[in-house]
Image 1 (cartoon, rainbow, N blue to C red):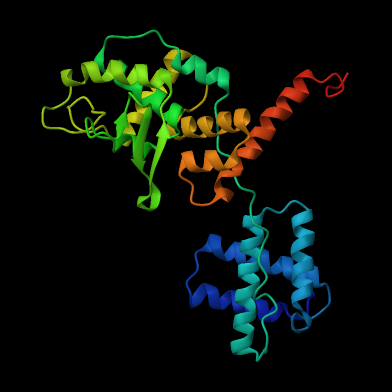
Image 2 (image 1 turned 45 degrees about the horizontal axis):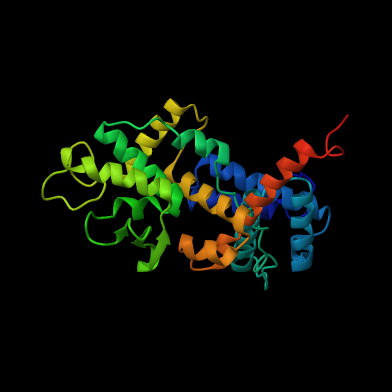
Length: 301
């Protein structure tokens, strides 16, 4: 913290209040000290009372340009805001110049999707008569074929008409209790037929679940996750697999082929098309990789 700033004593008193009255942990106190020191440094010789919202925004922009992450900027602004609230109570400051100033939003993490080749490698395992393997194949084919959420998959019941293999469609109830009907592809239908043929071998007679675990009851989401990771390891698919990756892969691959964002939104059951638009970024990344690999002027000599 700058030793020469005119308001250093007030900042130290505020830090003391945080330590003794709010009993802040030493690590949290250090973060506050660093964040408030940064403010004094940015102010130079100017007093805290002279700070205006426009300057705060400029400081945030400068720090962001230097590479400070949105989360760190949010922490910084929180410390500054708290200081000015304390100054208003104890030093008669009339306005808090940090109120209303927000840090930049962190970039949305793109969902992880498998490439078409990885999905093919994952799902092209040789047919297996073992009931649990037939179940796993059916689950993974259905997740990828129809873009289901994991919760929607495990909630499916056998013989209730919501899975119609003749028509090639499945009806599920997703977030917000919204029901949608989505197509089921030929490979998934074949896998589901194979599983249904052997389901009775491990399902408890009274259990209605389409997919059941080793004890014959409705399969748990965690079991689906473990089975997919084990399946992927056997098939030589690298990385930590998760059932939601098959949903992301479905969305990305359908969008690449059709360019129909509204259709993908409906099939995924997204309430807002803004949620679906993240897959346009995945599509762009895929195209960029193809460009980098194939275009004669994309690569460095």
